[in-house]
Amino acid sequence: MANSSTPKRTEASQAGSVMAIVAPAVGWLIPGAGHLIQKRWIRGLLLMASIVAMFVLGILMEGRVYRPNSGDILDILGFVGDVGAGGLYVVSRALDWGQGAISHATADYGTKYIIVAGLLNFISVADAYHIAIGKKS
Amino acid sequence: MILTAVIPFAIVLAPSHFTAALVFAFFASIVFGITQRNNLREQVRYGLYCFAMFVGGVMVAGWAMWLLRR
Image (tube, rainbow over the protein chains, first blue to last red):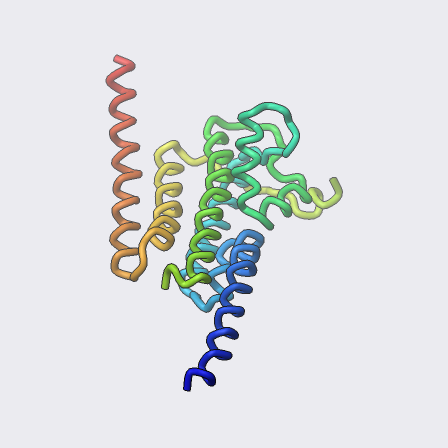
């Protein structure tokens, strides 16, 4: 009995350890995907919708997308927040979004939306990791 | 860049401060609710709590700034 269950446990723990690496990585690259690959469909879709919506709204508000090597400490912190959005940040940099001239007073909200979208994705990635290691259901 | 010309942003959103704060609170509360609690009931309750705290904080800060300005 014990002999037959041991290999199954080993396989399950190996799958769990692989998922503990894959889920956060995929979740960072595509917000919410870390939950989706673990079959947490509703949670994943809600996280994806929320984070993508915040990032896109930030861009539409003419928010600024920070670059990595500007030299200013606040800009570096802004970059750390932005880069949390993973693939969204890569796409926005590739298409040169978030670099235009600001034409209205609330554009600064856009910048904060983009940073917070990235920070929320960091939280989402940590949650996906906790699900993968079994700390959360 | 060439790609910028392919996908231009014709729409520019310029919401009021309060609308921007409400939308921010809405999406942030969803993420907080899902990630900080375990079961569905607790997630909904915590999400609503966060939303109320965000909006309440905006109200309090707004009135505080109004008082300071006078």
